[in-house]
Image (cartoon, rainbow, N blue to C red; front, side, top):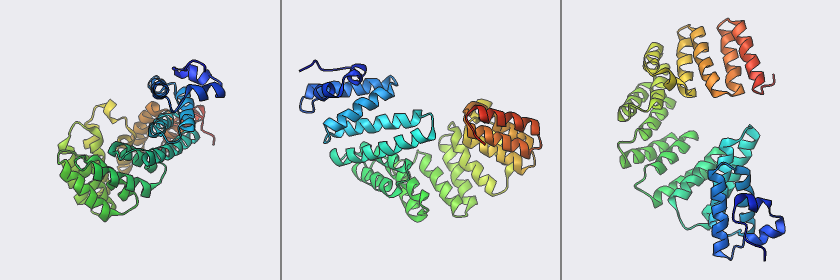
Length: 312
């Protein structure tokens, strides 16, 4: 029997027959070495190596909980690192399916169920996600994350009454967390109660004033109320570097547009597009400069979009 391949590189380099012997599901030492090789490749961003070993491990150990959980983690890393939407989508789907298999094989585990729920939600399997989050909450009732995620998933399906009940539970589990309250603010906005949405958004922000993203629900409520100058006061109080998220930039640009300052809105979006680096952000910048009446800037951003891979 050939020597055990114990590194990611050597495992990938083995031929199929050799790797079948190297990954022996009945040998605890071989399994530990293989799992260690996957972890090492994953932590050092050698994702193709990690994927090759993890996939092979699920083939030779089809009833191993650890094998499928590891494969799911590798696919999640690939989805976050993917250079194209096609790669990202395929990796998210594979991760969701691997997590589903892990849940079937593993003893009940709240953390695994929560991860499976997140993976299912990313591919639009909302009912499965809601079920996973509910099961996680039943196993771990003192963790507000599970009902928070369940409530957000329910809200995505416009099941607002159910979502409100679950999010209220999350809030009662951890009254210091701003996120259930921010989610309740979003529901109030969706159900045409912007004043309540604003009250809740401000309550959430008071709980963690250093969290810049908590200003976004407040800005959304202010926008619905037509109070655009207040949005700019709220968001432009942040340091310039702290404004460079898509959600915050969008609210700043929208407020400028509503006040008739389309050039300022396009400029704000352009700063985000410079940092973001995506083709779509550059296309949006070009459109905003067209609307601001500056064809030179619009042409420049269309050229940037093409350089980033956009095809008209």
